[in-house]
Amino acid sequence: MMRTVLVLGGGLTQCDAIASARRLGLRVVVADGNPHAPGMVLDDEGVVSVTVSFTAVDELLAELERRGLHVDAVLPYGSDLSVLPASRVARRLGCAGIDLDPATACTDKVEMRRRWRAAGLPVLPHAVATTASEARRAALELGLPVVVKPPDNAAQRGVQLVTEPAALDDAAAEALANSPSGRVLVEQYVEGPEIAVTTFSSSGVTATIQVTDRVTGPPPYLGICLAHVYPSELPPDELAAVEELLPRAADSLGVTDGPTYSQVRLRDGVPYVLETGARLGGGRDSELRHLMSGQDAIAVHLRLLMGETIDVSTELDPAALVGGGCVQFLTAPPGRLVAVHGLEGALAASGVRNTAFFYETDQVVPPLSSGAARVGYLIATGRDRAEAVERAAAASAMLRFEIDPPARR
Image (tube, rainbow, N blue to C red; front, top):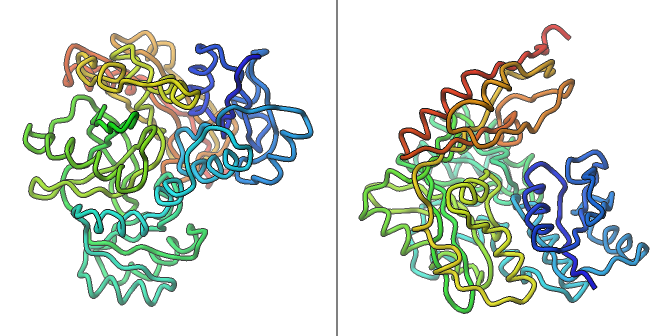
């Protein structure tokens, strides 16, 4: 019998996971509440679509049972929102997947910090509030600037840098509105380079397998990634500190098998982990790695879930990453997307390996207040970092988004 993996979410990001699973000869069940999502309409007899939101665990399980769909493993990929449901579904089905304890820890930034502190890792001064007034008091006690964020959402929703007291109440209210648990995390701001770090754990070994620089958008909305660039420009001693710290961060959260994806900032050479997800990143990190090295981290994770023994040091060796690479995210003004111009030229540009769009024509692009508002992405590689960045910039400059702005509608 063909083995089956349940992929939670059918968006463009999850299409990478579906493709990796099919290359391994696995059948894929895709769960998404949107029947028109890209992964739900694939012309592949080995892909079965289930039109149920993956957050509705009871409904999803009932539909799997009704349709007689056996599942061997559950894969959360590219989004923190899928991690806890993946654990709950796997637990109920008795199949392979992430355990509930690390899934819980990796989707709660307050619990992350508690565990990191207990493990002796550097943790920024912070406080937790349940009202805007509590958040204001905490921020003033910590001293501005601070970062105000929901501790339990994804894609940088509701995350803001606050530099003035007058902005505190609105920022806290937006964070609370984006927090399912009704909490807001107020944390001291770190001025310094930001990086994305992927680790992978197997057979008692946790190794750092990829480090990219994160180019982020301007405040007040914080951490919205506009580009991932490889290799990182961190000095060797700071890079070594990161590569030593992140496996410890993953271990302290209970991730002993599988990947983690972390966002890290450095201050005076000291790395501070801002968040860690028990999954591979959704910022095209794995696609970039695959293009640069031939190593498919998603396939490695799937094989681990299917019971294979993984040698991380050889199958996900960072030394296999050759040259430079850049994931350039594409943005547009808010409004209805009328057309994309210049695509043919951008795709034909030197070094461009792939481009795709999260929004289709006639869909409304929201203001850039979270990662979900990015329009698409473009990946370029080169002989080194500088060439990859130059190629990505040149190709993205060829693209023009025709927008019908809100004022005209």
